[in-house]
Image (cartoon, rainbow, N blue to C red; front, side, top):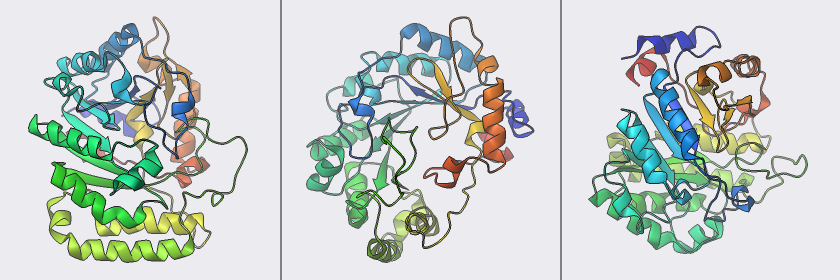
Length: 343
């Protein structure tokens, strides 16, 4: 347990960094409809910056690192990066679209603790419609191989208009392939920071084919009702990460709020007080959805940069309910004192 972590909850300065999210590349081999990162030229994080982050993570008592992107496995040295963090005693998670798992399965041994695989369809056709590549079976094969190598696999599905009816299929496909758990979140249709420069100008939250209509939301609620009955054992065992009540809150209530049928409920979140997102070039953000506040450069202390005036201002603003992005957030994360000590 790390008592010093609790100091993060006292004010807006970070004494430690329990969770580090690292974008090791901004290249991607998917063509997702809800993301524009794949339009950008690919940049890979330098190994010098990786080594600096490993050193800084040890100083800041980091317990978890999430390697992401873009598609993290497109970095030619992703496995070496994972190994450097893991060798430093940091639990290492890899977030991936799964397209390269089968091809690179030999690179996982001893490098990754947890694998999070995006699975945005319950059928090959829907998967290709959303992800832009014909790779549904390839991803399921990758999950099976990862399971056979002893990796803990979670699938994460972004619910949107094209796939919400396939939630039961996504659960069955993921668990039958060997995933230990299945997780869902709603599609983000408004944030300009998280998924590339998606919007040329301000748009209405409902000006997207990806959000659900009123009739869709009614049907979604019925689907969740059936899930609660048909997958009662899976919910009980935690194989479906979110409870039925939480699914109704993060999906049904969220899409209703997008339609103006109810108000957005401010999510419970304090992620910027125990984590930070670090991009390919060392740019720092409080989380996926808030803007950058600085950049880690040569000879900088990560602690100094993540506690600069801009960072403190952003943390104070979100904590006091003054950031609109937080109102619409699709994946808030909260850690109380006990949870923070357990990290």
